Image 1 (cartoon, rainbow, N blue to C red):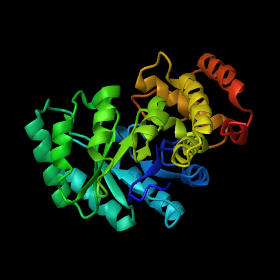
Image 2: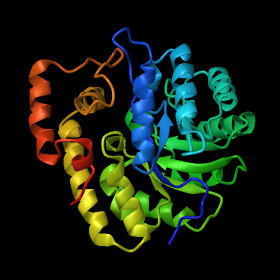
Image 3: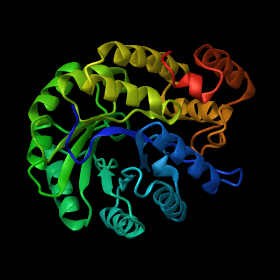
Amino acid sequence: MKNSKKYNGVVVPMVTPFNSDMNIDLDAVTVLVNHLIDGGCHPFVLGTTGESSSISFESKVALVKKTVEVAKGKATVYAGISGNCFQESLDQAKVYTDLGVDVLVAHVPYYYPLNQNHILNYFNQLASAVALPLIVYNMPMTTNMSIDLETAEELSKHPNIVGYKESERGEERMAKAIGLWKDRADFSYLLGWAAKSYEAMLLGADGLVPSTGNLTPQLYSTIYESVLSGNNESAQKAQEKSDAISKVYQENQILVNAIPILKFLLAKYNLCTKAVLLPMIALNEADEKIATEKIKNYGTDLKSLNSIE
């Protein structure tokens, strides 16, 4: 069984690799993008895991340019244009479109508390003003606002809004949303709640957006492909292992601490440096030791880390 929708599969919200001078590490971008593609995934740059709200426009352009260069023709490139200034989001959309990304992703502007009417109006205007297809991204953890499913359903009728990325927790909500859109050929549901990847796929989700996929793209591809081919045992094994690895950097951590741990883990496996932009703080030695001890249980190299054997 194949998913015939245009936007499907495992879309990894890619970390942004930096050099010690805090410019984009273009060599590491190449390594990381190839790692994701080899693992059967698509790169999503400038999302939450990619520290998008902390990156200068110049650096964003360098990141997008290199990602497209490496991925073009091999994977679908998703690029975030979230921000508080509508015009800046449009400017970014235009530049990224010209650079060759495939699809844009945006969450709500997060400075002013908005009601559902503001959210509806914002995305309708954004989708009408950009040249590429747009995916609506619900991220209450950072925006402090939730997009009601009724609002999302209304937005799904816009001809240029092609999908919905969900990072809000709630099994009932997840099941309801998948039920709404699984039979819509023109609209995709992508789940950004990695622990529920297997469950969502069984219900008919179109794709997964796991931050742990930076390290273990193959595990999430295994979940995705195994459910589609009816091999639930492999899917469950991959889910269990990816959950355990996710805990190494997420358990008892707020987002601003989890991302530096994830980047340290990626550095351990030579995928990028551990550098993060302010306000985040790179890991200290004591915390590095803890993370090193924990990850050791799951694989000595990237191959064993990504394997369910």
